[in-house]
Structure formats: structure tokens, C-alpha cells
Length: 143
Image (cartoon, rainbow, N blue to C red; front, top):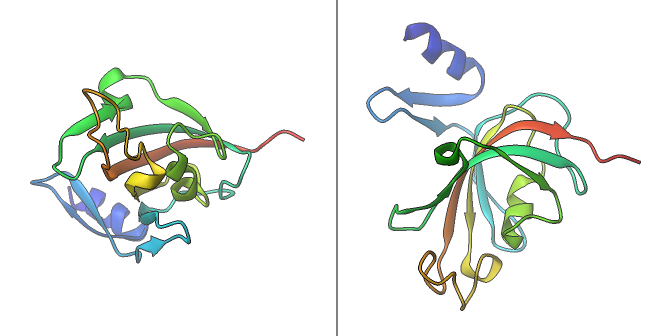
């Protein structure tokens, strides 16, 4: 356990709570001009993702109540997201700059998620979405 804590600290994480199995960040949260908030939990390595790049992701999406809406981890299959074409509009803003191996919390306001419509039976109208994302791989756009 001590080796894990030291490795996480060296990677830029403030602490690892073994009871919660959660990372907390020493990196400040960033709010984009669109209102998306993101916070690096673990910075990745390599070239940061930019528009047009593809990211292979694992994620968990929650409502503010903590209820899980979707999880690639539960399905056991990561997804490939092209920056600029994400399934939730605000997710694009939160993924810019991630590198392979990075982990990030992304808060997407309702107007950049599913808005007034929500997703019947899954996401209530005007819901903020909380993403926990792991960038497994960043694939640069092809010329």
C-alpha cells in the first residue's frame, strides 16, 4: 500500500483514501468559458488531446445525487470519443488537454448535457452530469 501511495503522490495526486478507494487532486479545478468544470486527478503522459483526436475512455457518469447514469466499467467495454463529436456536448470541453493514462473529474452543466429534455427514464430534465474519466489512450487525428 505504501508503494501505491508514493506512486500516486509522485504522479501529482494529493492523497489516496484506501477506505474510499478514491483519488483526490492537488491540481486546481478549471472552469472553461462554456461553464464546464474539470479537475485532473492524475495527469497522463504524452501529447495532450486536441480537437479531432480520438480518446479511448473508461468513464462513470453520475447525477448530482450520486446515482450512476452510465458506466463503461460496468459494461466492461471502453468507448472511443473523437474530440468535437462527443455524445454529450460539454464533454468535449472537459476532455481537451487530457493525455494517455490521465484521470479527470468533469462537471457538465445541464445546457451542455441533455438540457430541458433530459433522457426519459435515465436523466431528469436540467441535470448536471458528473463524469469520472480515464483516458486509456489518445490517438492523434490523422492528416
